[in-house]
Length: 416
Image 1 (cartoon, rainbow, N blue to C red):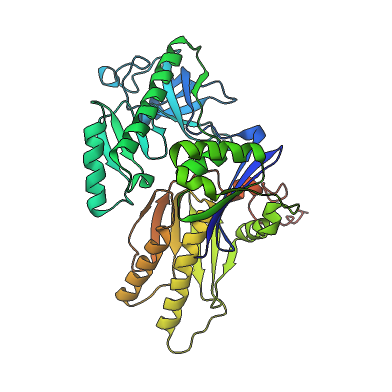
Image 2: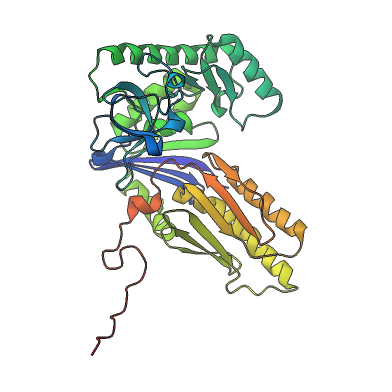
């Protein structure tokens, strides 16, 4: 895998964060000053329109476009929203005040997506104040999972939900209590500010991109953070001094004249990741195509002809592809439905090997994924919750000539 490090580069126009594994780029995030992410922000919204046929509503949160609130995301009951059980449909009315959190960024012509279930994250815990449960990260296993569940149940207030994050692994009760108190104070401030704010006002802002990465990703497995902004370097070290003092020594100010992303060849790897075809070491290749409904990934043997049998040739290609697809999904931050067409194999045991290899590749992914077992035809269906709009939307734009179709229509013959 290679030495892991985080590169943070800040300019007047944008902030860029790259996660590196050795010389290779594993994740890349861009946040432009003119279009900063609003995911995680909490607003006192105003219901503008109710669509009974869609079981949804549009809510004014003070942004350029009204945000979308589905009935499935109306899950909480508070003084800012009527009891959904007492009325049919959404349980909302026009011009009603409602406390909401952004769960998905605006994209294209679509506004942001909202939820009424507020979730406030910190380094070790996530507070879900309008629920009553204890959740543990699926990456925490065995006795440690049992220990954290027990400790969290002991310290959490009644009628309050708490999710224990992966970073809490190995942490003691005092640390978790301190984290929980910090989150409870945040929730108290949100409730207080909501009562005196006007509709369409942001009540709570999520951390900016670099601080989210430090909070959610940075741990002792990373050798270092390099940051080329003195102000951001100071902000990061100040934050870590409070929550994880042992990691402060791993944060370094980048002082070279050569731009950081040029030195580490980040943009070269981004350009490669924007291509639909990715070659494998053996000579096979995969093709990634994104559509409005789903992302399809096709595996081909290409130039690889193998040495012994067709089944072994296909198995080797599929195994290489399984690893590379896991890497590309992370790098491109592909979200939604993904369908992978591996080359069909006759032996069920070989199909199981592919599924295992692909599952192992996804273990490196921070995003929530759900994989359906491989079919007899070699298809894997999966879903993934992305962190951003994706690499393609960030660095590319629709071709005006072909309108994104990848071809232009020939001139039709002129009728005589």
